[in-house]
Amino acid sequence: MARRRARELAFRTLFQSERGGTPVLDVWRQVREDAADEQDSEADAAYGEDLDTSTLDFAQTLVTAYAEHRAAVDAELAELVSGWSFTQMAQTDLNVLRLAVTEMRFGPPGPPEVAIEMAVRLAKKFGGEESGRFVNGVLAKVFRRLAEERGRDGDEVGR
Image (cartoon, rainbow, N blue to C red; front, side):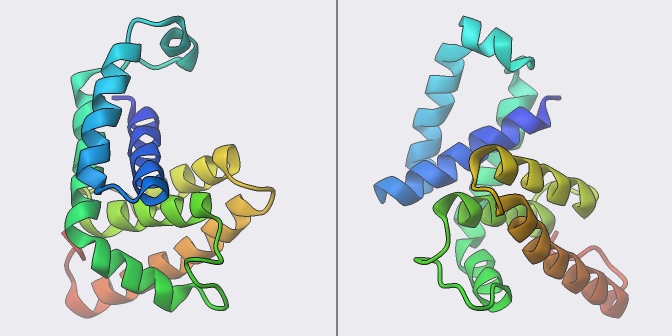
């Protein structure tokens, strides 16, 4: 499964939703249609990963989870990102963080380290010079919090 591509589609959806003030699920429908149209293009071949049903399903799972848990995700980020408001933060960084926290807390089961690594890569690809470092620092706090919660509860958290 091309999860890297799925995360990029989900990121694109969150970013476009934020920029356009359009509900995230409405943007997702358009992104999904656009991605399907691009499937046979040369740009897709250059991407290096096929756009298949499992890729779209994973992206949809992330987007839907974010739409359902946006308030909780944003509350956690607001608490952990000291010294920055959402309006001051680069929108690329904010939406990469939103996607990663959604995946770590509400996405399909998987190692949070993978979600962090993929978020750092997205931040480096689409963000500014310090985006990767910033995203990694914030997500390290989320990771520690998850580990503490698991230690108290003995269960998977957020799933």
